Length: 503
Ligand SMILES: Cc1cc2nc3c(=O)[nH]c(=O)nc-3n(C[C@H](O)[C@H](O)[C@H](O)COP(=O)(O)OP(=O)(O)OC[C@H]3O[C@@H](n4cnc5c(N)ncnc54)[C@H](O)[C@@H]3O)c2cc1C
Image 1: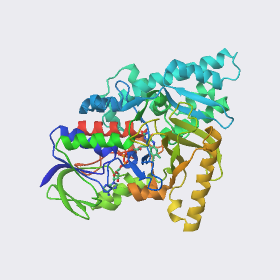
Image 2: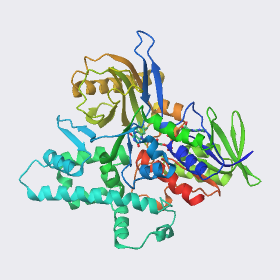
Image 3: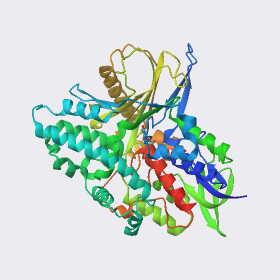
Image 4: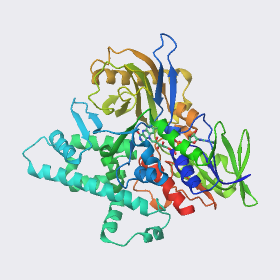
């Protein structure tokens, strides 16, 4: 049998592309190496056998969804695929999108409501509260962020080939002054804008912005185009918890795909993609599959190994060389008694000083109270992650060093949790598991455990950024290494843009 499309990998990119194409009546097969779908947006379970309390579900990486406001990528996707109504009771909007804990003990509430957030920001970052000049600048800055955020998604949605491959790709944009302004912000770095508003002199505010950009665009202000930064900085206004955990979101897409007639095969790790007689041959350890088109949900760093075409191999090897740096993640998964105070927020960014990571922050996601699909009543599950530089080092470490470093970071994070959440110390911990870049590579097959996509870098030529289109006709890519920007909304938008262009 020859499929219209074979999709390699069932991360959010592969699943969303698969569902859209299947709903357009193409014949689609998804091949996934793992036991379940989701990739970085998947989960794993632990069932307590000793003195049983039940089943705990841990999100492996992603924990939040964003881009669900009107016209944003996930909103569009759920409307397009008919999932919006089905999932409306599962998506729980967070009034505090993020609670940031600064080293000096200050807490910054990222309220979803724009006015409330600006007021909070003024209170927490303008120490000279009588300075009208500083206040006005901060208000202007946030107003610009919110205005751009709404338009940025429109721009990246309209520019179907985004990132663009040639200047010509900009030409299909309506030529109005608003779009020209947007393009200006695509080529202006965030530090310049902060400087324009004289905010660069506000040290606390700059540290806050740095950590916010790190969790969204993986780079500091001087490297992130302001257009992208606006999307990252506004995301806590649009943060959702998915009942039962993030894999249930992936699962809903998978189920809809299967209900539409799509086929998915698990434990099918693809090790070769070749092409002859106008047909792709996709090989796994369990067999060969054939298709007219292939969409790969693998990262650009993994592709060189599995394509057989020499030109294509070179293309991916070049990309691997040119984008050789990316972040890894250290993750901690905890099942803990619900006796600690969570400040009525599920998502926390805690800034701290790490002996391994220097100035760092951890992102703590807590399961919703009484979400019994995730943890038994009276218990919560936590996924905690922090950025790691040079993730490749973790697989080169000797076993003793690996264990030692894992313990150092785990202990540091536990200390941070104990000092941040009242009564955490006295809450029983049922499970405490950790993951390194090596673990991520093992489970998701992402080269070196590189996660979160390609760090933003304005100095690099945008026309050379990896994209969904490869030099090989009918071989395409989706996922976070071929679309600049934030996790789920970026990956889904990339899949929507691609499927619209090719079908
Ligand atoms: C710790 C962490 C926290 C994050 N937090 C958030 C968050 O809160 N919100 C958010 O929106 N984003 C978040 N992200 C980012 C987000 O999870 C990812 O950007 C997104 O899920 C990536 O999706 P993807 O489609 O690119 O691919 P992946 O998730 O990498 O999926 C690729 C799939 O392909 C499969 N695969 C790989 N190789 C093969 C092969 N050879 N054959 C067959 N199958 C294969 C893998 O098993 C996997 O299922 C986070 C990421 C991490 C790591």
